[in-house]
Length: 407
Image 1 (cartoon, helix red, strand yellow):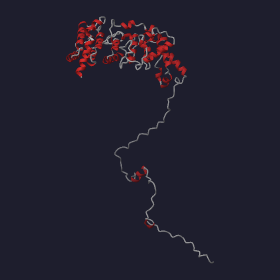
Image 2: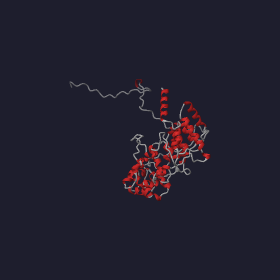
Image 3: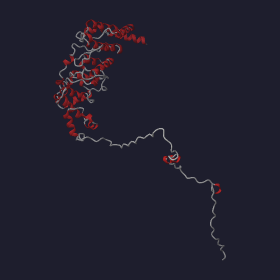
Image 4: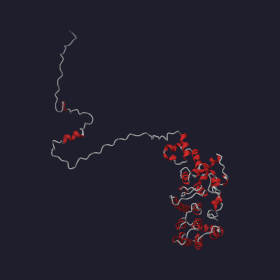
């Protein structure tokens, strides 16, 4: 038929020759990805087997690997509460108040968080120091003072709360040491207390006509502050027997002294802490602290030659501090008296005389009178101190001369 070409028969495709490198010298196709590695055991078996080395004997015995530690599963975020901790809050507070144990919240964090309200602490303090104080001994009541929350700030707030509860506090406004105790509110001059500060002279010394004159003049603690009546005769906590000293710490210490609190020199380490606190007060010039340490029968820190040496040589010889140390040792035994002929002290006096320091002559007079009478009579304080006090005009002239020489 016209218009139609010849039909070609189907032909099978020719087979391509295969060689080492394939057709037309093409490289063989490599498999993609990282080649698989044999396992450690199979590789060792391929290299060396027990049949290849039948006579191989290891020089050391094989080391046994320790068993793998079992992975610890993470426990619950909070430990399981005990049956006591699971009690209702009202019942926990009731037990806390009836137990009279201020250290109960320290048993666990849960109890510490549950029993941390200030009102609850006020009620517990009132039970221990006022309402049920006769049920506890001195040591049991002393545990309250050792608590961290029992500070001067807390005492002020507790006093205000007790006054609102109807506790008759006679003379609350007559004792300025129960006023606001924030150091940042008022200046130092405004925060000076009137009870003992009025007795200070221009040298900063406090005269004493009797060893415990201010303790006897202060009314009994159970009459002046009934809510703090339980403070009487308990041990002074160690936290207020050492520095750093500030107004709140001194007020707290004064309240303890006026409450006739004692210092346990034998059963605890409070005596060692008080000795270290005495050196801190000497170096910082805290004469009021030295007053409570040296001139009270309840604390009764014994002055030593080392304290006098520290006051003269290391603390730049503040004569008020020296007076506190010398007068505090007036009733000591002869074998425990201060050595007024200490070599280091007289070396300082000689060096001060060469510099023209007027304190050297006054200190020499004090030491000589101490050696002759072995006492500095506080009853004759004004007459005695006038021998050592330098007129203010001479002091101002001396400072002016030093300023001129320095310029």
